[in-house]
Structure formats: structure tokens, C-alpha cells
Length: 419
Ligand code: MEV
Image (cartoon, rainbow, N blue to C red; front, side, top):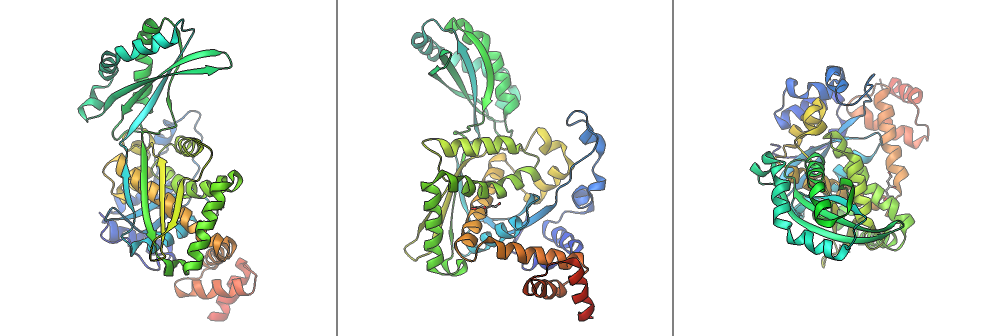
């Protein structure tokens, strides 16, 4: 467990020193961190068996976001992403929330929806009632499919039936609500839906076609709130402008798409680092945002003291057991770094990162714009590539930005001058 995630100047350290610091804070050793810090240690045999026609691996940079305090617990957060600024921005926003208690999260429980599509139903209304009459029996049969899930306290909990009108006629959609505990749950709910299908056909007199989970995981929500300090944000005017930026997204789908994209910058990075299904999370996020008209996944308002209160509500279908999370050696290390014990706790962390990411983007956009920060980070990377270490990194980076010449060659020249 991480005692304190506040690590000032983490970005100024060399990569080797960051790894040292990571070991120091997490207590993880070479054995654990090996495949993360040295991708050459990842066993290709494992990757070969994950998908088909494997010829190699695609590596992404993995950074650690600092400063996160969530439900009173400190977290260092691994983020795998190709885009600069994201990790720094998340860490920055997390720092601004700390003085006000950090992030507070709640959830609906890990409930997934599985759909059974029935066509050619002679009497849809009667069929709907008949399915509900047999609800207990159907739930019991669904639960027979997964005794392990039942042992862990999960299983099919409810059924709902909807009649929908489509281009090819009326359909009866039976939906199974399943508590999938620490699994993302796709396998569990798909197996249950397939097992139930013949019974549903018999009850309804119709024909089943699809039996598959829905990624619109509206019963697997995480809600997070945090207060960001007005002074840290740059004053009350910035607070007002952030709220105006959010209102812009609320009123306009073109802006809202980008607003929500910024949230997903943070969320996807942790989803990927932990070997979870980022397509499922993206589908869930944007479909949930579209219920009732496409809207921002976050909200902002001002506290009586003038600070910024932010919140996020988002489906979070993540797992800790099964899938790549258990198999991929880097994902396993990332879960250890996070120190999360349940999939729901992981969901709390990921949604908090989404809120932090969004706040950071809005703050930058509502004040100096995002290019300045991008350029400063880029200059630091260029300085480090040219060989700058420790304090040299900032000195060289500042000169590069001032001269508007952010090039490795120029960085090398400046380093020579400094010697
Ligand atoms: C860039 O990847 C994300 C932002 O465009 C998000 C936003 O505009 O809110 C900065």
C-alpha cells in the first residue's frame, strides 16, 4: 500500500531514479517490476497465446500519476498512453483536490446487463408477462451456469423485459442483470444468456437471435466527486471560466465530444495499463453520455467559498480476474502498484482519474490554453533526450521554449554552454 502519493518533482527525475522511487514507495522489487521497466522481460509466449497470428508486441510508454487521494487512500496510478501531457495533467489536478479531501467515490455495484433478442413472438405483451412469472426459475437456472460466481456472492439478480419496435418488426428483449463481482463479466453473462435462450424461446413462442452483454452498463456506475482549490486553479475567475467551459459542452455536442474525449484520455490510459477492455469502457461511456441527449460525463459548480466542485458519473465495467489483467505481466504489475483489492475499487480509481483529467484540460483551456503546457513538457523531453539530467532539464527546457527552438541539437548546444 502506498503511504503517500505526493511525490514532488517526480517528473524531474531520470527514468532510473523514478523507478527507484517507485520501488521505495510501493515496496515492490525487481521481480515484480521487471516486465514493466524492461519490456524485453515480457514473455512472448504469453502474448502469443492471447490473440491470433501474433508476430510481436506494440509497446506504449507507461507513466505514473502521483498525488491521488481517493476515499482516504493514497494511490500511484499507472497510465499507458501515447499522448504527452496526460499523466502530468492528471497528477496536477489530483494535487489540487488534496487539500479538500481528495476524491470521494460510490458505486451501484458491479452489475452487468445481458440481452436476449427474441423475434417472431406471436403475443409480445403476454410473452413479457410470462417471462416475469418465471423470473425466479430463470434466475436460478442462469445461476447454475456459474457456481464460482455464486460462491463469491455474485450471480444473476434480476430480469427485465422490453418490447421494442424495429425496422423489421416487434422484438422482445429479455435482459438479465448479473452481479459479476471482480470480473468484467462478459464471459459470465454471455454464458448465462446462451443457456437461457431455449427456455425463453419456449416461454415466448418466438425465435432467439442474439445473446450478448450490453456495454451500456447503466447498473455498473461509479460516481466520484472532488473539490478543487480556487487558489490552486488560478483564482475565482478561472473557476467561473471552467464552469462556462463545462456549460459549453453541456449545450453543444461538438464541444461535448471533445470534453468527454479528455475524460477518456485518463480513463483509457489506466484501463490499458491494467489490461482491461478499453473498447467496452469507451462504448459504455459514450452510450451512457447519450442517454437523454449527448451530455458531459462530468459536472461543475461553485462551492459557497468559491472553490470548484466537480463530479463524474460513468459506467465502469472493469475486472481484476480473468482476461489480460491476470495474464499480461505488465498489467499484473500495474494492479500491484495500484494496490486495489476489488474491481469496484479499481473503478473508483479510474473514474477519479477521469474527473482529474477533465478538470486539468478545462483549467488549461480556460486559462493559458493547452499548447503552452504541451510545449513545456515537450521541451523537457527534448532536454532529457539531449542528455540533460536533474536541474539541467528545467534550465535547458526553459531556454528552448524562450528561444522558440525546441530541438535536440539546440538542447545539446545549451548543455555544452552550461558545462
Ligand atoms: C486532448 O487530447 C484533450 C482535450 O481536447 C480535452 C478537452 O478539450 O477538454 C484537451
